[in-house]
Length: 192
Image (tube, rainbow, N blue to C red; front, top):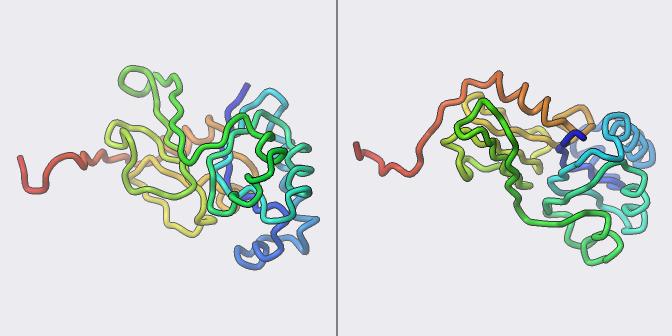
């Protein structure tokens, strides 16, 4: 089993092609490529954390797409998910739906051997345990935010990651290239 992360698929959303410059001629092609890229990486036994904005289309189309996508899916809500989440069948495609989620995984490179991964649809400047090496994964910005080479944060949206989910191994590899500088935001400015 592998863990994957992604965001901002915008399945069935015609305008996203123009807004983000996606290389697709229409939504049918876009959806097929996104599903194909997903299934080329994700098996039925893998876990996928989707950090919001699954689809902007009729809910039946969204459900059909999700059913074709491999893996055990979790949804961290995005700003465009609320309409589809009113439909129980759409919601049932996910193990759970939450506004923010913190995952802890074994990692020998951090103190106490546990790495926290804070997931939210939106980018944060600080997050729980950020000064202790926790990761922050986000979407929403469609690859438009400049990467901070000093922070363990990254955009996992499809527009920033080759239109496919990114594995936990790839996240570790990308984070290891950063020059992380912990900032303890708890200290009062000017206080020694």
